[in-house]
Amino acid sequence: QVKLEESGGGSVEIGGSLRLSCAASGTYISGCMGWFRQATGKEREEVALIDTGLDTTHYADSVKGRFSISQNNAKNTIYLQMNSLKAEDSAMYYCAANPLCTLISGRPSPFETYAYKNWGQGTQVTVSS
Image (cartoon, rainbow, N blue to C red):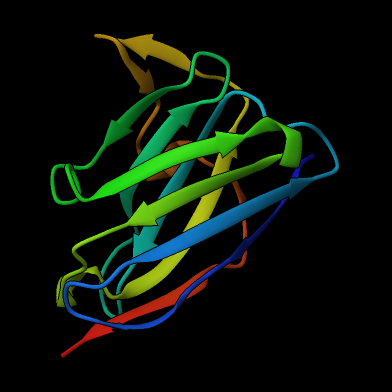
């Protein structure tokens, strides 16, 4: 089973940028890998997803145009570039992996949080003025 470790979180001002990393170990990244987040008092929600085989992506509407998910196979790592950060982006960010990944209407699936069983420990992102 792949082990996932997130890094890159921190505190940033509104409008700023951060890049999160998720390093995988134990096996090569494959299938769907995604970024999810959970704000205090809220349920975990989907942020971005990548089909590591086809390099296709899927984004939540709330981050579309601001966030970008990518992969570096040589480093066995996926990234989340976050630009134009808003206060509501503050949350613990987790990466997760699902070896079963399909395309539905050209976008990788599954995106739903409940479909992921293999999670990292998370990295905190705080956006404030």
